[in-house]
Image (cartoon, rainbow over all chains, first blue to last red; front, side, top):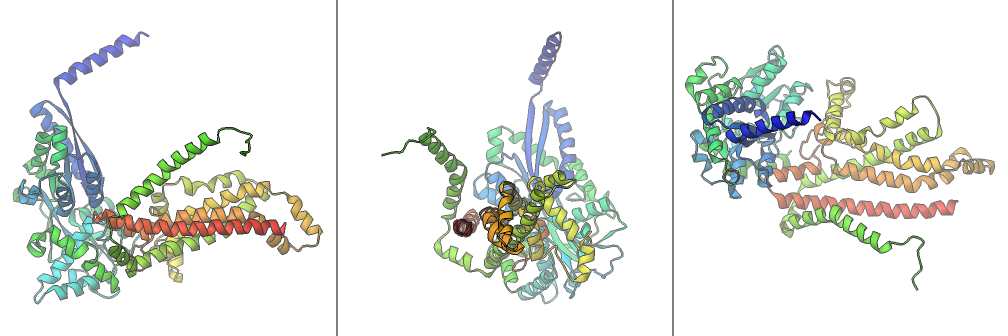
Length: 332
Length: 275
């Protein structure tokens, strides 16, 4: 019973402490391969926020497939910010009035503080001699990539392949269609998500080449060893721009708009850019990128907006029902 | 005149049953149907006539049927051994049977894939023989067999326990061969329970997503299951299309379950006639 005064004392102290500093919680709904990135970002930003404002900030994370995460937010997951794999997944939130439709103009660089690109992961020694996209349609070669209908990452892979064929001398839509259809004929397994494909390739030993985001490829190499896999950077690829946005309606409801906006702006600061680069995402800042020599080889890149208009158009044309990807499968 | 029941409370309990079933089963199904109503008839027909949808439905229902038949045969054997014989380790073995129930389906899927992939424990021996299981329709069925297995065993066990051995002895003493005893005496008595287990295993396999998705390969027209098509629709934020496909699967399953219930009644009469 003598413990009671002690407990009361602890509680009283905590109560006083909590009067001085507010506890702020932010929910960041993100896609799968950003776990490591945002663990570092959250730690750094929370420390900065506490020194500047005195409030103790906790950033909670929800990770999952990008499209599924967008649907969760539509269905009521109270995200203050979303950091997803492609702009279309935030567009559908704007369609439902969860945030302003000009969200992509509210932050610099298409609201994508970091980028990546699509590269090839091959087995050590590159036994099949894969150097560029054209090598992927060799008969008998096995290419691993997830299903673009269910995986946001896979849509970047698909568009990268299409864009490559389109930008070749004499390239047009017909040639691009033929190239992409030959490529997908070489795909023996369509996993539902990017990490699933990585497992199929790395753990199950299926396939000769994995189409992967550069940050995923670097992570696999780091975790499973450089002696097993090599990264091949093609001559040209897509600039993957994973976007971020404050979910207006939720942030206003929670009274977290100021901290949510500061959180996303932090990603553009030198500190935020360095964290992105350490987690294998290409920073927008050339200065920070220069501090990681050799990690991000130069290659020609094109953006979705340059080649396909924008993500809405790309989604409708390629991935919705009856789109290019469906037609490719019906002729299978 | 109303007959008096031994135990009172029919009205109360029926009210409870109707409310409970309504809330737990019918309400979500009604919500599904309501969502699906956003799809026009034309669109629905288009969806149903697409070769890809048909292929996926064929794999989901065909695969589930094959898996359920397989489970019925093997499940009968296992239940027989478990109830008729006493051997060391029986209880432990008996506990193993429920594992597919307890295991998260994704874990089951990953484990099965790890075993049957070309570099897996079994896969590395099977694939050179030309038997590829992972990433083919065969893998889909394998996962379906796994998740449906306990149903048949668990529905048969109590019936086998309760079955009097006298009838077998009586059949033998009346000059029945072993095959005759099995076909004309034991099987008819087991048939209703066997069909129940079969129906449960079938229903489970048709709707199974978690474990199948890892081993299926998910290649359209080849190893793509119908539930994946639903997920694909959701991925396009096409809730109505997803719900419509869901309703179609539900109708198919409902018809199948009704047919099995019919078979069961018929087999009950068969058992009475044989007895």
